[in-house]
Image (tube, rainbow, N blue to C red; front, top):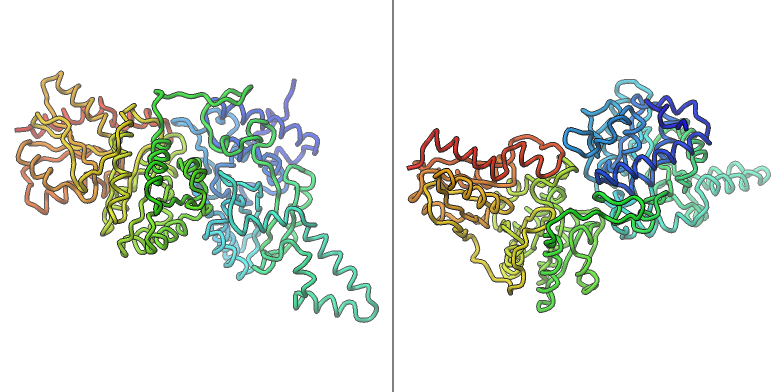
Length: 629
C-alpha cells in the first residue's frame, strides 16, 4: 500500500497535501518514530506530542527561509524527517548517525543548535533582529514547551522581545510537563488558561458589544483598549503575555491540523511579537507513553507491543539509585538534610526522598540558577541542602556556585549525575567539563567515586564536611561493589593506593579507576608493572601522594573521564611544577579539546583509546619513549 511518507523528501512536499492526507501522514510518522526509538532509544513522548504541530508549521511556513528554533530540541524528530533526513532517521542518536537534537552543521533547516532548555526565545529574537537589519522579510518561530518556559532566560527574552516589538512568533507547546510534572505559579496560570475561552474570541466579543453603543461606542472601545479596563483582566486568559507586549492567540488544540494551519496563517499578518498557546498531549498515539510520559520522555530500547523497557545491564543498581538510597538513609538521622532538583526528581534519584520527606524536598522546575541560590539560602539558615542535577546542567548555574555558595563557604552538596561521557545524547549532554569549571573555585571540595560503594562513603563525608562539596558520578549501572557496609567518612583530600608495586603509576579518578586496574593486569602480562592510585579528590588534591609517587616512579599517568584542558591531569601537572618535581614524566589521558560526538559510551571510549586496552597501548608507547626508571 502506498504511503504519504514515502512521497515526502522536503518540506515543500507538504504544500499540496489535503488535511486528510496530513492526518494520514501524521499516523505514519508516529509509527516510524515509535519503531525507531524502540530500537535506538531516544526522546519518544515529546516527539509524539508535536507531530500535528510540526506538520502545520511546515505546511504554512517555508523552511529554511523561515527559521524554526526548537527549544531543547528533543522534540525535533518530525522536523528532521520532513527536512530531507527521513532516509537517515534510522541512525538517529547512533555513532556516526544524525543527532537527536538540531545541529546547524547537519542541515540548513536547523537554524540554531539546541540541547539545553529555555534558549529558543533569545536565539529567535537574535535571528529576527538580524533579519530586520538585513532588510529581509522571512518569519522566525520559536517552539518552546511550558516546562522550558519556567527557565529564567525565557522570561528575559520575552521581556526584551515585547519591549522591542520585533516581529517573531513563539509557539508555546503546553503539555503540562517538562520531564516530570511541571511546578510553579506559571504552570498554575497556564492550567487556568487551558479551561478559559480563547483570547481572540473574548476580545472580539467585547469590542463588538462596545462598538454597538450608539454615538460613543468607538470612543469607549478605544478607551477600554488604552486603559486595559478590568473586564479584560477578568476575561482574557493571555493577559500576562499581552502585558509583555505579545499578541496572544489560544489556547488551540495542538492535534487539530486544520485549526493549527488557520491560526498560523493569521500570524503572518500580525506585526510585532505573537505567542500562540497550543495544547498537546505528551506521548500522543502510543498508549504506554500516554500513560507514563515521564518514563517515555527519554527512553532506552523497548518492546513496541508491550511498552516494556529492555534492560541491558549487569544486574547492579545504578549510581542514581545508590545516591537516592544513601540520601534517604542519611536523612533519617539528620533532619537538616534537604534536597532540591530542577525538574528531574526521577532522573536524579530523588523520587524516594520526595516521597519520604515531602516537606524537605523542592522541585524548582527548569531553573538551575534558582536551585543553587535557593540551596545557598537554606544552607545559610543551618540546613544541609543536596542539589541533584546532571553534570551538563550545573554549567547553567556556574556563577551561583561560585558567588552564592563557594564565596560564602556555605555547605551545599552538589550531586552530579551523568558525569563524563553519557552516550547517544551527544555533546550537549556529555558531562566532561565539571572538573575543569569547578576545581579552580576556592573553598570547594570536588570528588568522584571509583564505584557505588565509594559513592555512599562520599555522601556521608559530604554531609559532615561543612563546606561546598561536589560529588560527580557516571550514568548507568555500578560494578556490583559491596554496598551493605555502613558508609565511612573519608579523610578530605586523601587518595588511596590500590596497587603499590611498579615503576609506573596510573593515577586515576572516578569511573576510570576500574579500567586502570584492568590496564595494570594487561601490562603486567607483558612485564610492565604499574601502581594504581584512586585519587578520589580533584580538590583538594593529595599533594603528599604526588610527592610520594615522584620519589617512587618515573612516570605518572593521569586518567580521567573529563576533558584534558583544566582537568584532573592539569591539576597534577600544576602541583608538580609548583613543587619542583619536574623530573617525573607525566602522561595525561582524558577527552581531547573538542566537543565529543554522540555514540554509545563503549564506542566513544574505544575511539578515543580510553578503554583498558587503549590506556595500556598509550602507556606502553609513552614508556618506550621516555622509559621508567
